[in-house]
Structures are given as C-alpha cells and as structure tokens.
Length: 335
Image (cartoon, rainbow, N blue to C red; front, side, top):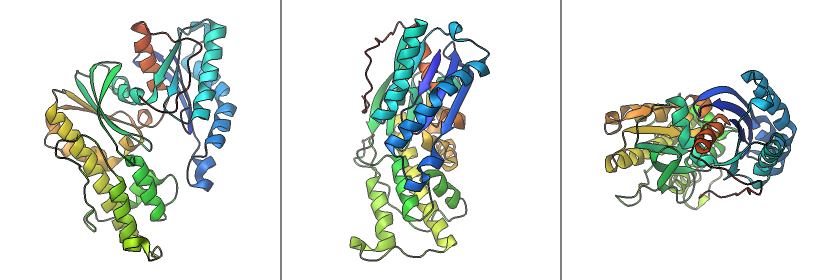
C-alpha cells in the first residue's frame, strides 16, 4: 500500500505491507519555510508539497526496493486539513490510481493517528482508547474494531498543540512553539505558577484550553492586558513554560484517565504531534488509573504527520473491501 499525506505542512509518502510493516517512509517538514511567519501559510505549504511529492514517491519506492507495478493500492489523506494542501496529495493519488489501474482509498487523517498504535504494536488488544493531540485537534477515541474509532470527546476551543504554540509565542520562544516550549520547560519549575486545569463538567470528556492560554496572557500583561509584555529573564521564562506545559499535559492525562475508568479499554494509546512531548509520556506512565492498562507510545516519527499511518490504515480498509471513486473529494473538516 502506497500512502500519501499532505494535510498540512509535512510532505510524506510511505509504503506499508500487510497494514503493519513499514517498508519505507519519507517525510519533509516545512518548519524552515513557515518560521518567518510564525505559523503555517497555506499557499506556501501547498506549493512546497507540489515541488516534493513526486520525488518523494520515487524515493519511497526505491527505499522499499519496489517498482510501481508491485503496488496493490493507493491510500491518501482526503480529510481533514488545509484544502489546498489536501488537493495536492489527492490529485497525485488519483493520477497514480488511474494510470496504474489500482484501487484508491481515502483516509481520514485523525483516524490514521489513532491507527498508528497498530503500526507500533500490531497485536494491540481491543478495545483501545486513544488520545489524539496536535496543533489542530484534541480528541478521545474508543476503538472496538480497527478502522472504526468512536469519538468520546473533543476540544471545545483551542487544541492542546495550539495552546502550546500560542504560549510559546507569548513567551518569545520561537517557532514551532510546542517543541520550543518543551525545551524551555526542561529547566523550569513546574510549580512556579499555578494554572487552573479546566476540566468542564465532572463527567465531561471534552477539552478546553482557551482559558489556560488566557490565564498566561493575564499573568504576563495583567487583567485587561493593560501592561506590555514583560522582559523576562531566562529563569522566569523557563518557570512559566514549565508551569504552562504542566497544566496542559495534566489536563490531557486526567481526561484520558477518566475515559479509561469509564470504558472497558484494555489498551491506551496516544497520537498526534503533542504525543511526542516527553512530560506527557511521563505523566501517562505514572498515572494510577492508566497503569492497569497496556500503554502504547508510538515512536516519535509515527506521532507527527506521516504517510505510514495513512498507508497502514488504508491497507486495513482495503482488506475490508473499501474502495473510493476517482471523484473522491478533499474535505477541510473532520467527521
């Protein structure tokens, strides 16, 4: 199965065999392109995908030791994401499917992040509870059958990664914000500032991170933002980064533990860019509720956007009989 992923600012192509064995995975991050703007510029991202996608396709084949006529199907992200970026990958996938006379499988990007657990540990026991946390998404899913993830909760405002990025910008830590904040937090005191954990209703599995982001802003500029941003020294910046990160990660773990307590999940997994965060993995491993479940922490390269997860889920869906027409559309929003 050839997988193609161009939903945001990573250009990725991969080949996966039997929906579990990664034969090749090629990924290009556009961080350097977008750094001057402090965020992803959709048109710049789309043009970068266009420049790299075909060379990456050839590279993925070469690294796998395969030729195009040995492919069985083409899987491609068709939702959710930046529409111009999705169209690049989808156009290439359709062209390959047509010219090679292969089945086309459209894959939901978020469902693929959930499915990355099966690439990391193919024998993961079901039901599986998954947290997907990234710059655009923060959701909880329950999987009783691979390829079919039921959403239990989602963010009502900012995603976790978005909150981390905005906090990093307020603290002057640079782009991309999440990794920069994590690096600064490594030398900080997590208890220096107490940021409230917004848990919503006692039984809610939804998330909200706009409040903690605003709390940091008011801490820096005062109520009503009447003060300019302060000139922080390195130690103060590190303490704020560590305290803010702790609030976000603690909230993620509490919600995941609540979901685990309310379901019969035997396995708990994480995915998405925020799943690369070391502190999140530490808190999950130490949580009393989650210790009773098998924890799956996919390798870091399977947490960021990649095409291996697209090909993996696509291969499974193909085996279940899924086929999509060449009229398959790109859709900006998830289900």
